[in-house]
Amino acid sequence: MEVPRVGHSISSPVSPCEDMIKNLSLEAIQLCDREGNKSQDSGIAEMEELPVPQNIKINNITCDSFKISWDMDSKAKERITHYFIDLNKKENKNSNKFKHKDVPTKLVAKAVPLPMTVRGHWFLSPRTEYTVAVQTASKQSDGDYAVSEWSEIIEFCTADYSAVHLTQLLEKAEVIAGRMLKFSVFYRNQHKEYFDHAREAQNNKMLPSVKDNSGSHGSPISGKLEGIFFSCNTEFNTGKPPQDSPYGRYRFEICAEALFNPKTNLYFGDFYCMYTAYHYVILVLAPEGSPGDEFCKQRLPALDITDNRFLTCTQGEDGRLAFHHAQDVILEVIYTDPVDLALGTVAEISGHQLMSLSTVNAKKDPSCKTCNISVGR
Image 1 (cartoon, rainbow, N blue to C red):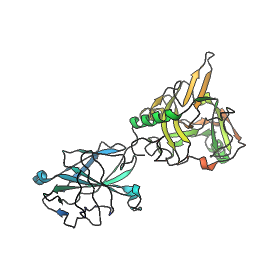
Image 2 (image 1 turned 180 degrees about the vertical axis):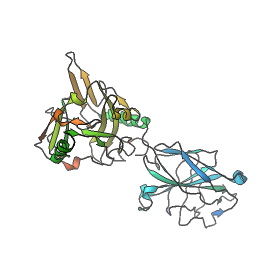
Image 3 (image 1 turned 90 degrees about the vertical axis):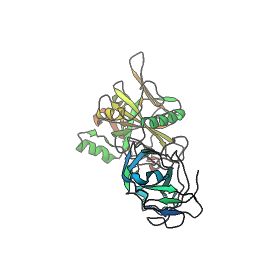
Image 4 (image 1 turned 90 degrees about the horizontal axis):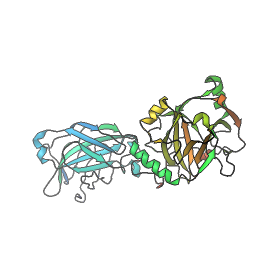
């Protein structure tokens, strides 16, 4: 690891703030940043001979890595010893730079053949827009650096969690799922106006809507999958749904078999908490061959409906279906097709509306060791 002399600085094309240089799996050093487009002290000198990176290309983007390459004038190529990369969250350009999460990242790597992979979950988050610019540099015999002008600024966005990342979340959720309890109905709480609208304007049907941004920031279903949220958790002492709800005083109940049966596919969607002891697992129920089913097949881990740790549908010797849910996690079940209100009942609950338990657009606790994995949160 190299450390420039004390007091030496390197300028950023975008942001004037200090930060640690992060590991590129090549070489890491610590630099400081300050105002201006060019370095102006004795530590780093401008040299016209060093080529400015041109035509920057970003590809092979994942939730916590990307490949970067560019074109350069070959005349001084042999003099280049390092690349300086300025990486910033685009959304945080005007925010408080003293907050750790908003501090831009300055990367320094030894000059290697391009394209070069930049990887690091500590400074790259999924589904996040970034700006990037590059300098070429030449380390001098006295330890100082000569640098080129900064390149143009390029924008890109990181990707969602991959199937590998979701499988890691799935395995973590399985650890705390607990024993299985019987249930017989799915239910959905809303305000009276919601059900009135479904009857009057939607042909008596609840229609799928785009999932909000609650849960893991890298979840591939947030803001993309269309569905209807249902619950199925029961009180262990009664075996019935709880009488309290965060979402409204009116509840639609439907026989479990109407939504969950051998012609339904089940997928794992997410695992998260909201700075509380409660942990949530998002599952997706999609009728075979439906648009929701095709969406999930390409993005989510499939679960065996008869044998998994969260939600099961099994057939007894008498041919009847039996349903069980995990006791120690709160299940949020997304059904991907419209649901006719005639298939169930709507009634007012007797309990309270517990708004503090709502998960609408809830942000995941990034510090929880139970439900986080080693990629961007």
